Image (tube, rainbow, N blue to C red; front, side):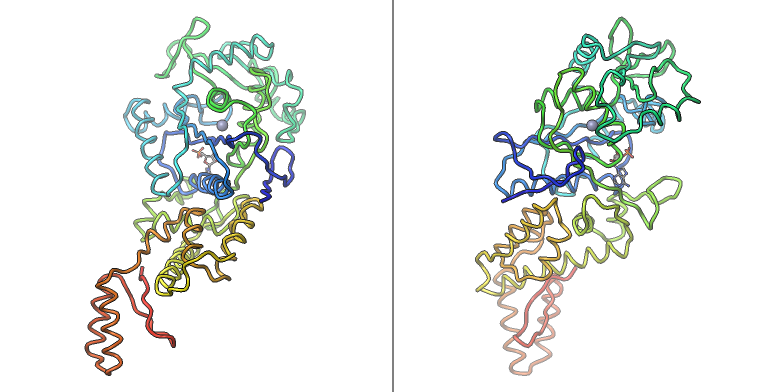
Length: 450
Ligand code: AMP
Ligand code: ZN
């Protein structure tokens, strides 16, 4: 089947064809220094959908996810505190403990969201040797210069620097002039390695060029990809905010160190707003998965909410729309319950193919959901939908056991005899097991209540 993906590199919808036996995918992962909020899960949900869609097409995938545990400063540039140091100061822990703590929280949350585990989960601090080798290569190839606070990438040496993000470099240069008093040669230059000044508090440190320092944030992705996947990879994914700085710099570093193009396809997802506003501490609208659970929503309900929209859109989150997603998931589960009760509905229909065609069209999950709403699916179709979306629809909707079926038959017999006292008692017994009964013109059917 044809798979089309929107490629940020060309700003076009393109046919995706793997070049090797395995589709090589890299996802820029989280900086493990604070509690993730629901916006942070959007990207991972959509990239999980990407992997599942490729697999549904019979493709093999190798996916690498990094965890940034060093080097990401509060600004995405080269200024401000290191995020891990900030987390450590806030929590009275060491930076290593902070990284450990939030790595666990992130990985547990991914499991709760039923994301397929990445094939390699790469911690930035495990790739310092590779980082140093890469800086040496970039320097040997004439792409770097040293300042008093680090080794910088000279972006004027990479002719295509502005291409990926369609950057207006001269505009940036002019805009930056006012604050452009440091030793950077160009506004877009960035640190590939930072030096730690005497007295500066930075617990994570490695010796390089005869002094302590640590890698610049963008470097880890270039070196992890080089080591774990090899360039060019098939698909590189991230948030839309990564385009102008982070991904642009990854591309430059890869070219400078290894002389290679980093990725063939670049996919970026849009941002989640809450009640029409950006997610931020000052607006007090930061929700974690646990906050949603405290309000009676499962991580799967939130995933349903994400899947109901398109990965490239800006999505506005409200609790009303989350309640609608929760209801949609329950409706789908109860359609599965009906399949159990309909012995004819066991084989495949053609519906799953249509769903996959929608997903193959640039991961159009909103369209796939619409097809599901409008079509009859068999149990076999639902099992495939579950594998495609990872929504635990079938797992959370088991067929009832023989004793429940006995009760259902008893109730039908009681109703036939107009023994409503008995039939109501059976209804209550079943309800205590989470099974509700709906009387339809075709007879009684059971459903799961929330
Ligand atoms: P942060 O830790 O806040 O820098 O976020 C890490 C990454 O999560 C960002 O680079 C984004 O790609 C993603 N992200 C953060 N906030 C949102 C949001 N509201 N919607 C979607 N993605 C987000
Ligand atoms: Zn990255």
